[in-house]
Length: 77
Image (cartoon, rainbow, N blue to C red; front, side, top):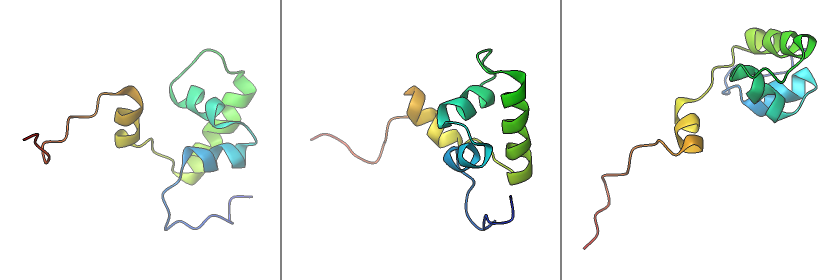
């Protein structure tokens, strides 16, 4: 089941979802410790996360929450 994934790529939330047989939203809920996930589903997703070595991207989190620092490389004239 897990052997088909190349380890030279970054493990994505979408890939964890596909492998666990759940939606990306469900994986997100598990990663964010939401109460709206059954224990069975949480366990299945956490096992996939552990086996694949999934780590949430700090940059993706910043972009999704709007907390990314403003770009200082462009200035208005």
